[in-house]
Length: 446
Image (cartoon, rainbow, N blue to C red; front, side):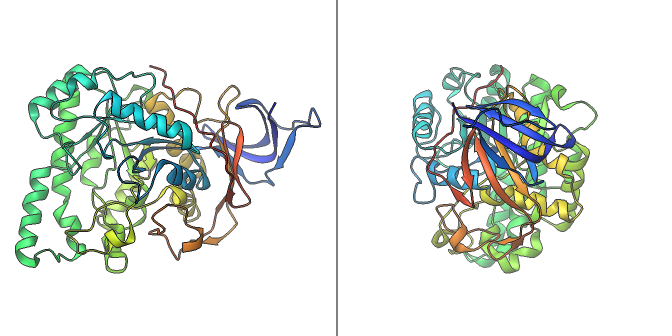
């Protein structure tokens, strides 16, 4: 029997922080108390030393690139980076190669993860203009949801048929997660800048090409469709102030039919950073203005935005170093997401309790994940210890993403992950990932 006793922790759970101990047996939390004595000699004791013990983060949007794009990353390498960053569960997107738009292709990804993933995993079913039959075969109890790309995707995953969208929204009971940008607006903007600059468009114009209006137009349309059909909608990576009035904080999260996510990069960077970071902060949707960033923080804190995620999407430095029109969008973020949010805590932008709410509790609630996302007896022991006063600098030699770079390279964080547990197994300690692939398939209460 695996028995671990975590002592002297500041336990962060459901809006409170309290000092106490946590006892793990096998893969579950079995006791939480002010003080727990070691009940047998085979109980491994870990002293949290007064640091924060929180649930492992649940990242509801990652691109781990397997199958088909494994020169950028794979499930093994990126899940390894994730647990080093305190992310113990991830939901991966379907725009791999081939696209996961059939039940057979979707299940192949689960089979890979079962052998290689350090973290718990789920994979989104992908929607297209013509795969409704396959969508309706998806089991809502063991698949996180359905992903639709309304702007910018690979293969044939752009869903641009109004008729297809209507049918999907009217037919499925799955949670529908969307990338919301209006493709026509983006293409028109791109052509305007190509006429002026050719392929060598300065990256500072990226937020003008993938504009506020492109985001807003698409999000208005998709929210209207969700309200008309009663579909359960989750809007990924909100990036503009203008979109925020489309979401509410007037009802409890459990009662919301429309929810929203913001990503680390939209909370951290602004368009002023293109000058120094260039294509390294080229994402879709684009990083926008400091005013947009400020509004995103306000909406995150007041409950209009429900989740913080990464949209971790690695590319090689060679790919990112191409001209603007050739350089792909996306970047690696799972290893540094929690410490980036703790940096915001140090800056007075957010409380630790709110970080845990947005990165742990709310993803579990929104996706109805079974027994994860909280420090509770009977829940899986997915846990993270964070030392808020242990500075470290991001360097090439400590970056674990397969692509080998980070937009945070050279930055010194004030906080550091010291321990990560996945299903009761200590997979990360002493700043090293152990060779333990403890991840399990996520299940859902639906």
